[in-house]
Length: 225
Image (tube, rainbow, N blue to C red; front, top):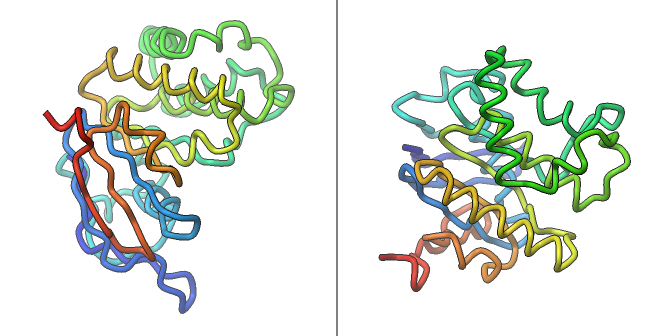
């Protein structure tokens, strides 16, 4: 479904991704782990079209080189960046609905997707009418996941979703990801994380990146079957 083939990215003269190659199958969940600065965020941003890259990226048979960044979510890709990027004066629900409005989804389709968001993240129903600027950093990551799910029909990219979360909220977030996988088994996920142990309970594979290159790509014990 997703193919990265010898992808390179440099910032000025500094190489960040060095011939990065991996594939992702439909419905597969991958933990994409590495130290800070290893290239995890750059990989997700490159898939979304936010960097100039060499090599090839294909998604569902589309060569993404010919698809600008603002059109890639329309392929069914949802992206939750590490810094959340919420509109603080909008309500939580308005932030979640914004991608559907930009994509000009029908009222019925928008309603259906909102139902999925609230099923996966039931705590958002209590936060819906609150200004997004009033939620905590951890709650903001939950809102960002809900917003990403409004467009994610094929693939979700989550950048460091557990970073900075209190243990209780981290457990709720993990439970939400399990509900998401149970709700839609065809949806694929790439989740970046510095700690490989956090994602082993629901990711089939762990890909480790070091200095912009794949260091290992291994199935997780107990889930490989």
